[in-house]
Length: 395
Ligand SMILES: [Zn+2]
Picture 1 (cartoon, protein in one colour):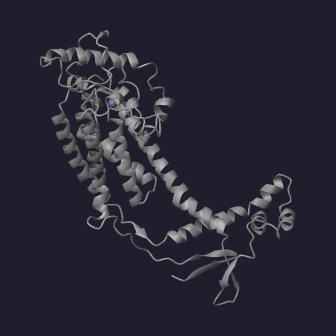
Picture 2 (cartoon, protein in one colour):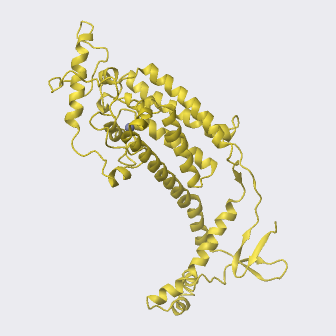
Picture 3 (cartoon, helix red, strand yellow):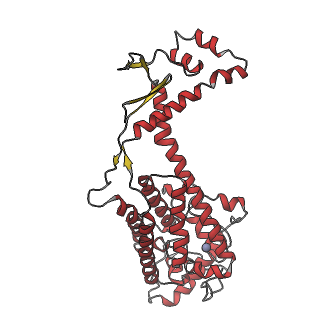
């Protein structure tokens, strides 16, 4: 490729040479890292929350008591862990097949792309005199007046005209080669490195949310489809590693195809995809963690968090709060967001579980779960002694 492309009075674009992007880690290829890292992140975060559960370290932030976990859920912890691992093996297999169509990420073109954005910024300035003219301002006159004191501003007002900004003389013609202003290059870098990626992440999150909302809602409306989603709802009291406790059909449609499609339509690079897949997996685990944590940033980025999704896992809230995992926009737009107080409802199920756990006390008044949390002191609610749902999970 030629060293420079000379086009009119625009600064020339630099030459570039593409080469494969080096792997993030020396001992594993990016191909396998992108497939495995979401599942590794899943278990790291889930085991952190599991430790909180086992040692009951943060009872004050629990959404449910340990008794509720053991009494209200229709699947044992063993069944959940087993099915999640099976599910993850399927996902790894399917992700491997889907990823085979992905070309490896290349590098070397970044400076060129930044200069392309700088060129767009330069071209956009050509509209300034006309825009100012509409407002009754004479851009040329203003530009001339401030040329000496504020040459860069004068250049912008003149339509991106910076005759004083040049680099070296052209080797062939001896003409001066125009250059970008520093502010143009800095703005181009901000656009290229921050604004565009942020938009791509937002777009992917928006598309994934839409995909999950409509499939998820359809699975609750259509009886035949609910058979695939019912497994996830055996957990009335979600906990972190139950996040991917799904029927394989649901796992494929919602948790494999959804992220893959949102990744494709947002035109992310494979490296960005890695961050996105790990991030959305951690968010899904966090949404099922069973804790409302004041210091967990993931629970405060949007109003869609563990407490929000927990409502959907309750028999009284199961027809609401379908949105997941990032925003609540679809629930808001389509009127499916839970409205009303939940405190009394939560209190009833805690009290019922506490009451039911008394018979299994070991004689000294201590129960297996040792509820230090919110269940204490509220055994007199209207609990009807039937905290466990019918043998079939409700729709
Ligand atoms: Zn559901």
